[in-house]
Length: 586
Image: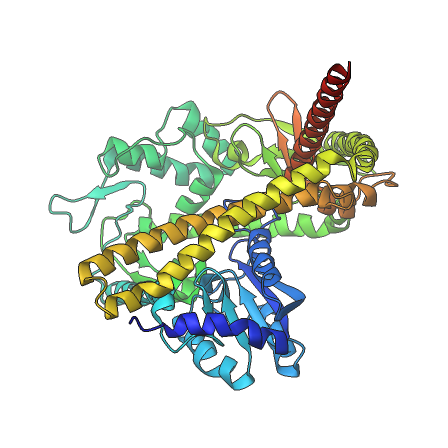
């Protein structure tokens, strides 16, 4: 007689425990990258929360009290605002159980995750549930099989950081002992025959010396840039491809201001090798940063110089003087520029190349009092001068006016939909659509529960000899693949149902946003922050405005059409039935 698995026994006894004890439950969700709430393939905060709510709704022993979410916080550290607040509530007894969609949302630091699961939660008596891994620390029997995949992923993440640390340490050692070779050669140089040192690229060296000479003669960066482009001089990236130092296509043919500034300040042209001008420490979660000159590693006279020390120092003095003058002018106009508020900071993009639009404050003339204006310019053209975009811009006042008119148009649409949703509320179309979406979720859930029972009995069948080892391994792999597929289908069905329910609610996010803006008389920073996702500016002057929660608005449009269509179909069916009854009576 086959032995019953302990897992099955626990599942059968669980409702008894659930009837006696109710846990104050919190949902925890996390995203590494800031997210506005849009659908993004099943990994958004909303999706995580929806899956956890669906799980809790099927567990009478769990009572949801609050949702905690960290948006744009890495999982490699546990010092996160929402997580810290959640743990405070756990310690005070406000929260007794935590539900997460999967372990990766909980954390990616293997050591810390293990510390919470094995020490902290047991000590606090906290129930921890991971839905995707089907893990519940109150019902598991000590076996870690269900966690093996996720824990392996955590180990892999730790391994990756360890490799990053070792590589960074090795590169630093090479730079310090002088054995490191920079693969990105500076403009004006190529490798010598045995590729052990820099040699002069005579053709590029002519233009490099011109850059320093023109600067010493008093030319501005823009004037130097224009002279190079008028002469058809290849920029550094294109020159690398011409000399065989790099392969592939070069994006853009023009020169950039930052490129010329970098050349004029690079001590490599004095014949020195310089390392450590910028560093990144991925294993510490730190982005690439520029280092001050005192932290650079410099080896003098390692290759032929292209500029004399005297000329180089003179150029540095000119650049420093120009920088000080610019800072002084900025200080003098600080109050004026501060009054010119960029309402679309990090929201205005070029519709042609997709890059950010720079907000530029500038004087219109030199009369007194000064008159200033703000414009948005394509950053690709302004900073890179590549041929991938053009010099197009839009005035600040024009853009603000167009955006405010677009918001007013949306307010009129919102008023119409608010009335329409009120008419459809409680209709047969609404009831039929709710039944349809609920049936889709129930169908997948039934299949998933049946598969879970098969998975739980699989190991017992192997131990009892019902299955051979190859049969067990094959069945296990098949069940795991099917479980993943059904889990994804369940997530999708839950998401579709919840999106429908939210879209037909008069208080959905889009309608709430519109109602909050009903009495707005002018465009303000608060209104932009609440309503604007992105603004796209095209070369022909067309402005495209993307409002927040546009996905909710689109869902609402589709849902209204579905309910209207379903209601019409139901009415036609009822009319046909009445007609048939009348004919039968006749």
